[in-house]
Image (cartoon, rainbow, N blue to C red; front, side, top):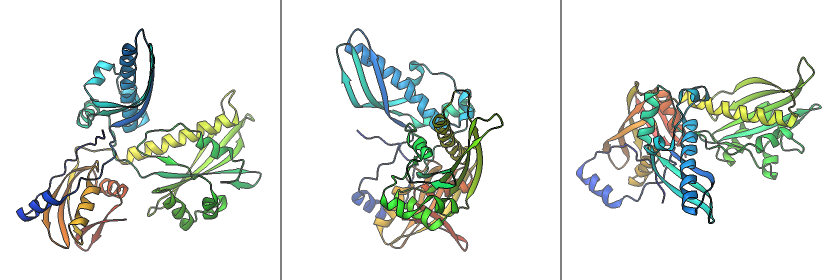
Length: 368
């Protein structure tokens, strides 16, 4: 079965339109559930298969809950979270399902999907005064450029910096980070020099190919520290479709006994975590701040309105949407939201919804 978080969207319209909507609306598109943790690997052995399964599910449930909290909370706040036993986690669990499983008389191996109760998890974090984010980002496309002997490598082999990014373990993050495959289309689209030059046309083209919102150019150069040990200097520039580029520089010194490949793997993971933390900081839910924006949705008919409504479903910062007026060519709505107006605009952007000012009115439209 597929589950999704129920949106708190409220609609009101004339009796005619209510009847028309009830009779003619197809099921809404399924929304990715931020409170679902998928693919939790479990492996337990006991005196009997049933006992092994119970043990595996219990261990998987606790592990899944930890992954969920780490998905929502910035790293510096992890220490403020308590340790959870299976008994405590049970009160937050909605249900779970089995994706894969193998069993013997004494052993149970499986991959499990756990779904947790969103409202209860939110209350838990609020009670512990831990800020959190729920808005999933569009994927970020990473272009790892490695500079060696004056040459800047992107899709060329060998590129150990690209290998380090490719070797990262998969993360169920609010910010998916992708690598281009490096096929002929990618090679024709952009090279290392063009990526470092910030060629917006080429960056946007390769990002669009992978359905990414932003592009992260990670330019790594091997250095030596003051003790003569290898170090990695990385210039990280993030390019958005409409935002200005931002560049930060990071120096990663090696530690005793660490190989250069190990250093690059550590740097790639750390930069991934920083991208995630920055997103969470920008999208923390401020429950004490609430606002309402009245917007006009220009439509060509009921089908267009339903498409907009489907996009609005699941936007974390939206409390409710009131449909004030629905006509053949426009819908007028009030969007009740949590946090700052900029957070609302950013959350809508992740759903490919544009909210733009035209004179004294806000116009909401599908970007694509």
